[in-house]
Length: 497
Image (tube, rainbow, N blue to C red; front, side, top):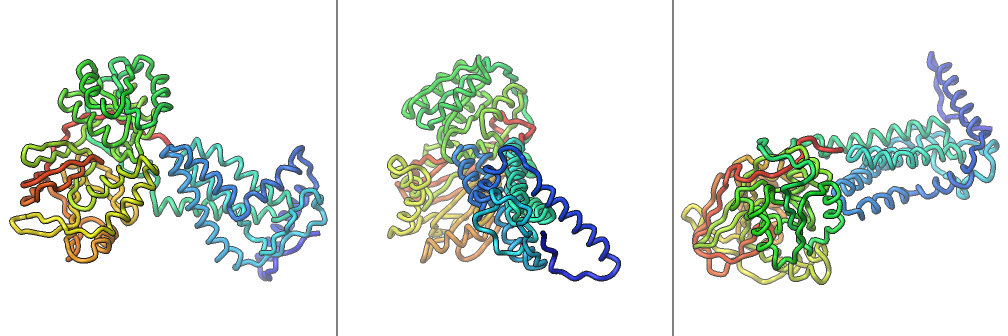
């Protein structure tokens, strides 16, 4: 009724192997003889839906569509874990032990798959993919993992129930999947493994019900659901929604009567709120509501639960603020400040974003800026004139998670993370080389250093400067420096999983 392993074993382990295979066969036959109400129509369909990982790719797409950063990370980690598990199973697992599939005599026809697998039985690729995806999701978010895990377990069970695999195939396949997920975590740590962003801890008022918080919401951010959720969590907080044109005026009004100034929007909106908070010496509460939300993510605030937890407990940190000045023009930056190609890209992206959306606009802007016929920026550094394609200064050190700077682990390190791409031919190639090379490198094309302040002289009139997604014009001498631990910002001191 069943097929044996196509494997010859001699010596003391032969009897142990026989007992193991006999148990494996008995479990298989017991499952074949068992009838679970509702399982006959459900499990075969579930098993087929997981062919080629389609069930898990669909689940990942659904998670990504929620717009939750945590859900998106879980989706990406789940898919990466699945990919590694599948590659391992197909290149090593199924080639190492060529075990025939079970005979289907004992399996009712209604359960059998319409198309029987033709690959070797050991181990189960479906079980490996299911376990890898569910484990990857759970490592990033336990609540989401708890939702996905029962579906993954049902897929694994369906492989025995339909007669596609022996129980040991499923168990070993699942072990491969779990191992793949942990291997991916070893390469790309989960958020709870990373150093906590922001230091040192600051004294800030605890607002259990939100009284004293005035939250200004940029309507253009489209975060009405988040705002309602914040109102439910902090019922005595004052929420003020405004149009982008009225944002700075509303922030000033809010700061004049608030104990804590709150803001909901993207990085440009947060920059305006930080400016008001610094002027009025108020702590700042940030609820991400834009496309990128770099500052909020580096701070560790991803959603309403993070922010309400910090406000209720009075958990806050002090962070550095960057300051640029140029011939009477002055402004703060929480993330980055740059000259050269990037400000042009920001301006071009803003021009297209209202027509086609944020991410597509970024792609179009990059192509248009890099293809344009332009001359590099001329500036003086350390008394010498240099042609530059890009001067980037980060408020704090950006660490790599891949080929480009991605995030900061310390928002109060007192340093500017400066990257320079020198002028010359083929700007696109130079910019790509600088991105791949990473921090603290020097070459004829690019350089990276960490300094406390920077002065750029000889900047031509009309030169664009970008800061936290906003763009202005500067000329003459441009100075960038840090204001150490100048701003108090709420963040949960214990990260959720």
